[in-house]
Image (tube, rainbow, N blue to C red; front, side):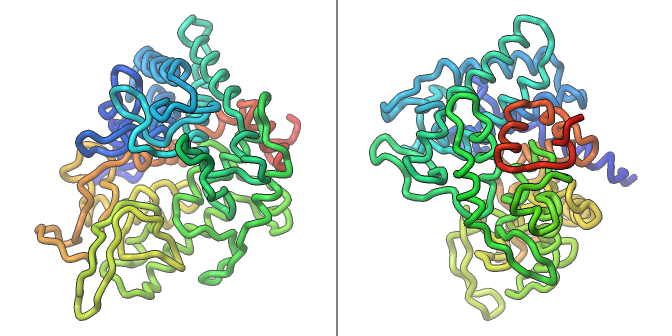
Length: 432
């Protein structure tokens, strides 16, 4: 017997939550980036785990005592881990390296101190500080550590004497030349930076970032453009943008929530239009985002030479696009446009069968166009799971079903301060 849509969502949420139960170091709470052997941890995935544990408690996926223990272990690790200019430290100036060794917790792959991934980590810590509100010693320590981690981040340093925020820093070469400009997932990054009580970003930094926005008209919709679908979702995991507006959105007469709804519809309409004539694209098969892929490879398919990529920032309608679909990114749009997302989830489960056999949520990606030697009629399917994919499934299903995470984060004074300093007003930000 086929389950109801709500029952399917609950099961998908529970399966995705399983990633954090089983792909986390018992020694330090770090979450592996993806399910490949000898792979490092991702600080963004670890932040998503910290935000997911309270949801797991509320849904009965995890006991509160176990969630407290796991959360404390994670926060203690980050608080006590080495901060400095040494090339094998864990972080610097309150920010952390993008990837960390799962065993030692030290920098992996000579990667960068990542400002945006640190923001996701800190957002997860702040979620824990709001949820774990008991007077017990352990829950009080969670609140103290989360607050200390957030206050330690030196947002002004991360500007590198510029107006906007840099992408990051390396001990060997200094600041990365790229800055967070143009609309993307950095919305949360700037709001957290503006809300800091210790090293806050100046309000001018948000205005400078917003001045780089691109307003576009695509498929009969006007919206603030960003190509990959995830860029319209990740900041919304923590912040309920319904009814609140900054200066840019007041001028456009919408809010960021409505903007994400339009971006979701652009994705569906692009798939229906299918300008590059990929196999499988239709009104129930779409979702293009930064993701894993079958490449790099160049293959002639039905007389056309196709270029396929590995992990790149795929996006619509301007690409890159190689026919690879990221199911998790569709699920993360549930709060914005459930009327077009629910049929896609059903299609992925019952037609493409992306959960069989599968211990977690959906596999990362699939590509019906890429010639695959398996017997799967829907083509190539990634063999990996990513923490950065599973977290949004857990959290955005919850926001769609109950709005629980949004309600918790409305009580976070740092987020409220950051929103207000960014110029947001109206809706739930009005004095109660």
